[in-house]
Image 1 (cartoon, rainbow, N blue to C red):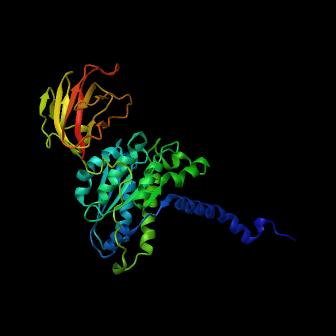
Image 2: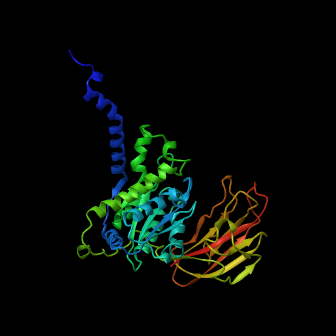
Image 3: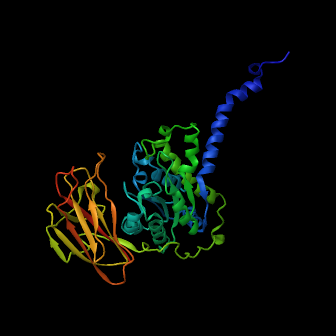
Length: 394
């Protein structure tokens, strides 16, 4: 007499174990899909060897609010902290320092200008970069990411750079443009989107299982991001040669884009003095905890600032929020002026937009003029305008 499937001990065990087996296979498939490219791992090998020797290693991250840790239930569960924890757990004999240079609602355009002050001054050995979602609104995404990457790679301590591609709730990001830069420089790259969007589309994972809102991962999503970054490091560590056999660091290739933003920085009221100031006061914007130091604020239309700057591209960082905010106009030399609106329709808070004012400038000094305008958004009740920093790319 034939046994029914559930009277067979072997078949019963298989049926009971099958969901767990499938889950394990799904996780393995997710992890496999997350890897975009291992790139050239020479730099990473040298840093892993450094940690293996018990030397101090600085792990840094730079990006937007996802990198800053938004929507993680506590800071130690953000993806950057978890990725740094892999280094701490793997190399208990080494001192691992973590530097988080994530700032919400920012793109790689600002990242290229602030990376020195906010990250490179801490001399990171490994830098993980996450701008794939925010750069969706950045028309200069490839150029500014390349500038950021080149700036890091040129550091004397030869840091390793890795790229992480996150996504929004439509599966969108700027992975294609970013990956072209990553491929050009042989960067290890992992994709949260490639790993998990197929699971969301197939309804094996709900969006809310991994995300807290339209774009920010929840704790599980942050853990996945960290796992994808750490898995690359673990793969390299597994076959890490002896110190004497470590590969040479490859030479930096020629730039892929116009490369306007490799040598960029920001200037504030402590580091640049206006050649003209009518109606602007120096202040520190409390919304940013001193990230950019002292800037300038005007409340009266017609207030004018003028700076003498030197660079191939000149931009401004200003503040937008739903409030009594106005408009301003910026102009470099006699080039076409650019208008900026500091009033913002959303209720979730304020942010600092990057505004390119002029690019491809001739060598030498240029005059940047900023004027507060009478014009304002019809829904605004005031004309206040904040300049957080003057951005110059040389």
